[in-house]
Picture 1 (cartoon, rainbow, N blue to C red):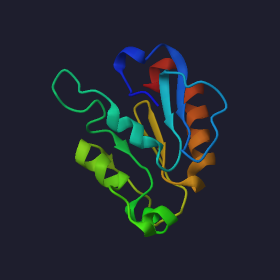
Picture 2: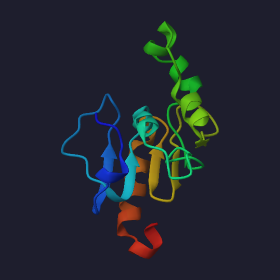
Picture 3: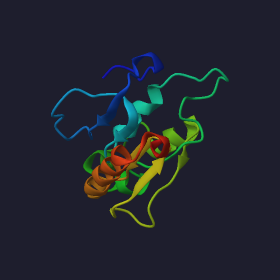
Length: 141
């Protein structure tokens, strides 16, 4: 998947980044709302460029993804991973917001970024995207 670039953001409805294990049903689109589906999809945000002030494009954004605790309970986590996503997002400048416990549905909406913590968050994440897209443009930002 190519890096996220400001220049590639065109005025369309949403960008949907499905979890690596999910099937993409169509091309990604950029615009008013960004939905990074559950689990590890927020990893693509790490490739986003720096802003004019030198900080990561998503610095200070609240977001969620698979937590270290959840990752440790997966086969890949038990085998040992080179790096963990929640730590990488925090180190990049994200305000990591995980649910009160592992494996429950948890969605975070910050500006036009919508993230889901784990596969159990998929339906709630989709609902948040629909709500964001249905809101008038002045409320969507």
